[in-house]
Image (tube, rainbow, N blue to C red; front, side, top):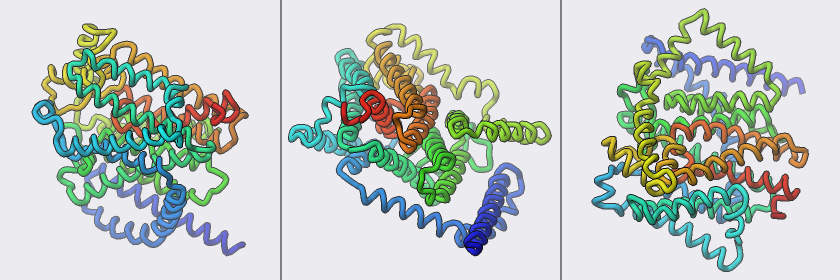
Length: 489
């Protein structure tokens, strides 16, 4: 027993030492002492290799093996949905108009069509009766949002584009409904959350692989980045720095939740600690301000639900003292500005200009909009001469322009409903401790997504898997609170 305590204490010292070196490396990216960086890297890599990576790798392999052992048909379909939405080439409006179905678009249609065909087959032979679940509860609200978008094909500025995009999103919702019908317990639904976080982590791994193989394209240096290391983006598949930051914030929140509110089996603690560090480092290099803000808001929520309010106040106070007596506040401010002027930052990187025009466009068709998934791109951005920008960088503004007030109404109702039922689930005695922990985790992720949706189209862009996974668990909690057993619905 004493030997075990000694080994644990020794391991903890090495972890602290590794964290200190990692902090120094991060600090060196902010100050002009780069000549010392190779020395620290030489010291850090053996330390991580010998003392940290083996145990973390073992836990990661064990976690993935456990997840893989429970694979079923919907795991593969969830993966196919993710693959269908990845971007391997950029297209502007002229390319879309001249060749709407290039090879990459055909691949996307075929993969999503395969998912739709599989779901239809399971519905017809009654193996998975998901149709009723598609129109019930919170999923039903999003289905109404999708149907509004489908109907808007009749007056859309780009009818075929609206029809396909709407049906594509509807297939994703149908898959989510099928999962809620298939799983036999709330604990089984956790597999969908874990699978979603795993796929999200896989996307971040591809970002770093691209950074190693093609740093020129992965690290974007321009007017919006003045740090020694510019903004990190994904190369193959293409991922904007905003998406990289959002995925990093989500994984960081999930890791922090599972550290602060661990399950009965605490063997994965070191794995989640490593995942938290990986996510925060990626978030730092992505330099996504709204993702950072969303992560901080979710962290406050986690500290509240884990009853660590005093810890949060202490950390905030310590940060204020450090900022008051050092130049760290100026460094943070410089980091957040990303090379922009204060006026440009107040303008939200030109978003306000886009949204002003979008508001005027919306007022011309406030009830019916300009067509689901089409108005923002083919009307507003076309007038702004932004042919390569895919959306208005706001789920709310985008929906206003595309489908009018009714589309926004159902989107907001879904968001508010999901947050309400997750909050009730956290505090309800009808949920077990593990189910309540998942409710806290999902609510924290929803906070990140809700804040981000103001500044990105994260909720309505295919594939919105993180949002759909959280929405699905909110629906599970709703049924659990109403019927005592979510399968009773």
